[in-house]
Image (tube, rainbow, N blue to C red; front, side):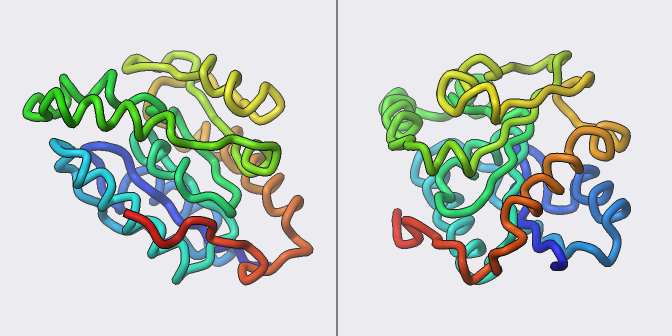
Length: 201
């Protein structure tokens, strides 16, 4: 089964990031990677919700075998229930970070974002779908402990790098998780996955 990967980039990044290029180079013809461009204007919750809605649309149309979300893209990916997701250094609580990255965000939007952050209902099925990969030298932030609390230690992986994953850690740490996801879902087709909550926002 050829892999279909939906990649969601982080804040300030693009769909043609070094991570996407590195993955495609290593996987070659074994994978098709859809890496759309999302808005980097995160000054309002409405725009964040629009990014989530767009990600759900891509998910529904592309039917990936796995979703990979990096940094803020990891936060977006938490809303894509029904598909295996690998979160790389995810920003699970952007309300704690966007006051620096998007200083124009209002206090009202910050409060709305806090509600959005905790709006998930996390059950056993959601935990099974979620994988977290964390750089142990992340210089920006780390939600490693929160991820463990929410999704469990068995779904949590670490790697010896900072916030940005390099080619070596893609090959040594990200790819084994991708193959694990493939193994767990190899009896399924993309049509078997259920894009829960596609209609929203």
